[in-house]
Length: 141
Image 1 (cartoon, helix red, strand yellow):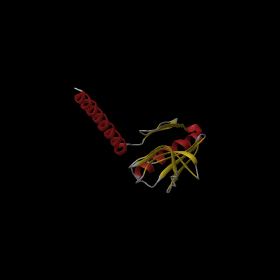
Image 2 (cartoon, one colour):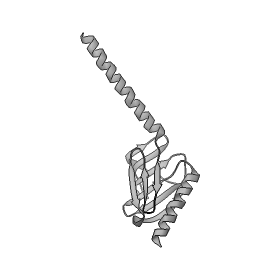
Image 3 (cartoon, one colour):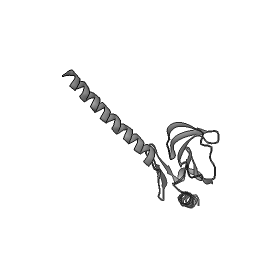
Image 4 (cartoon, helix red, strand yellow):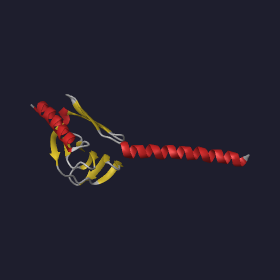
């Protein structure tokens, strides 16, 4: 009787472990950065973090062609992307939402610090930069 009880507990533990491993694998493989831009703000959402910046709080928007990521403070260095709070010499502690395969970035400097992000392709990153920069410029006028 005791062996059956132990077997059931081990089986339950194994099932829970498999489910957790599959969930973590899915997070590592299927994570995305979702960016929405409206007239008032930029909203950035990943599976691990979320940031909203109002255009009135943005001080500059810039396109970057290189980035020294630095070290992870809190967040994730996933297979395809970085997501969370990182620290480097140029920006100090900053938010990073970037696909590793795409080597262009959008820098947003705001009253609370810096955000660096990109999209899944160079073309989408360029479109994102143009959208954010045009709305930021319209706010500044």
